[in-house]
Length: 225
Ligand code: AP5
Image (tube, rainbow, N blue to C red):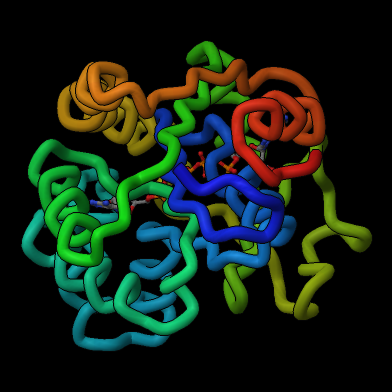
């Protein structure tokens, strides 16, 4: 297992929609100098750009359903093959199905690099719904805010790039319900897989983002909160 501060480490952040995977992955990646790889953000960027991939996945993402394994497999293999991911990565939103976990295992076995930790962030459903309903995202750079827990300096404007903030189409109430269903049916089975493999670290995702990070840091070598 990777260990020393600054050494490469391969982490997966697992958990239901809205538990704070993206928020924590950003902080962890910045502290460890590793790329934060979010499959949701890769897909949303493709949708914003209107690329062939974006046009293919837009309706599926906006309905809150998972895009096909083969398609997301191509996206993630291309991303993990880039130079910046050689030392390690913080994966957010992948894997999400058993087939995706198999693909990740094969990819890492091919490199002789095991997964170090799978951080399972857990938050009760009413908190998830409150977080998603209050989330605002930048339509240009994808930065994430919350109207009360993490507001931008100027209401409705992204601190990072100055573009207008929006509500994600998949944060509509009916779509949140579909995303939670997809998590329960397709992603939750990964919890026992990673527990049996001795990789799973369950983390209470309630409290301020810095408090949650402190709990994660206690389980990840080289990570300081
Ligand atoms: P994706 O973007 O991965 O969405 P998700 O898993 O539903 O997760 P979210 O981004 O909604 O939440 P999060 O856990 O990152 O929470 P966040 O930090 O933003 O995927 C979107 C879609 O893409 C999927 O539905 C699917 O269609 C497709 N897709 C993606 N990956 C796929 C895959 N592998 N296979 C197939 N399809 C795929 O926090 C939420 C809010 O809470 C924010 O406002 C934040 O500011 C706030 N917050 C965070 N932490 C705290 C805290 N500690 N206290 C208070 N507020 C907090």
